[in-house]
View 1: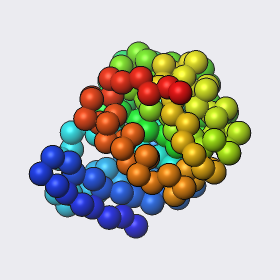
View 2: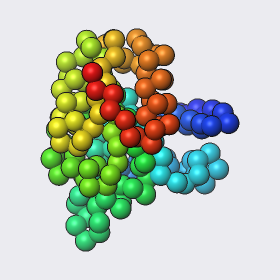
View 3: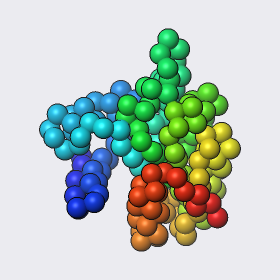
View 4: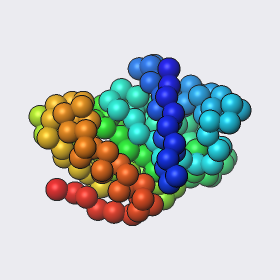
Length: 169
């Protein structure tokens, strides 16, 4: 399922990806949205709450596995910036998959709730191995529900600044 909204300066399309979503699923979803004229087909910022972060880790792993191609180009075709929210899949990802975000120059803003130890751990790993900025918000695992205004502000600031910001606390 999905929803889309547009303002003069910002277009947002939300997808509710299943837990099993991988790089192929993500690619099919983007292709379908592009064919329907919902998105431009340009690289975009991707927000992945919780388990849907596995789709991005799958994409990074796929990019790394294609040694004949430049792994960074594979990710850059789709992703302009990544905003994982307590993405547990990061904890089991290979270091190579995480490092491809640095090689691809894809900025990451890793967000987690102050009551979510696993979210904090995955965000710290993204900071250490993928160069992510991290942000702790008040709340549980779905911190975007507990601190919606702060979450929206952080995401829009990150996008408005082209992913070039350090919001670590």
